[in-house]
Image (tube, rainbow, N blue to C red; front, side, top):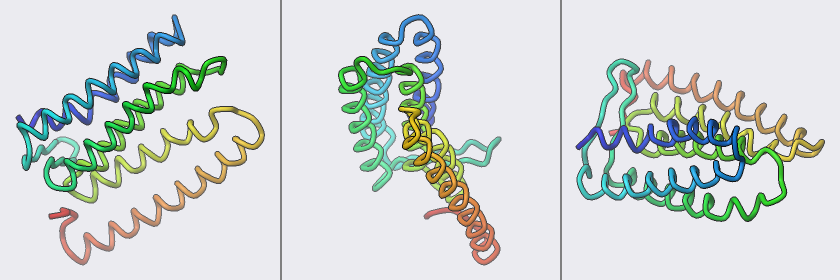
Length: 184
């Protein structure tokens, strides 16, 4: 059942690309894909809580590891529930706006990255998914593409890059001192 943990993290990433393909033909339909994907991710997260609680999954090829227990489960379920609620109201909120398919694409990518952060079992995995989350959520900041949004986006990405570099330096120091980046 620990493969279910990986599926919870990867499903939103895969669904983002499905949403993008659907969005090329019909921007409104990609909202339905986002809602369905967030709903399915929520169901899978609850199933994880029922059948994979306390288990871990290691992706040896990439060195990434995930855990579903204690705070991982709580934060995972809460974040997916909030994303599902956001996806439900997004079509109404974005009625008459442009680039809805882009928004939905990055909504799902950011969900996958957020789940990667919350379900990470070590600080390397946390760092990788936090950086993905920083870059995918940037698109939300600049969604309106006006001067104010672009200025806010410039500030956002500058802080994200500097913060990421400082965090990476801290990870190097921590690994040097402790010999591990495992959260446990």
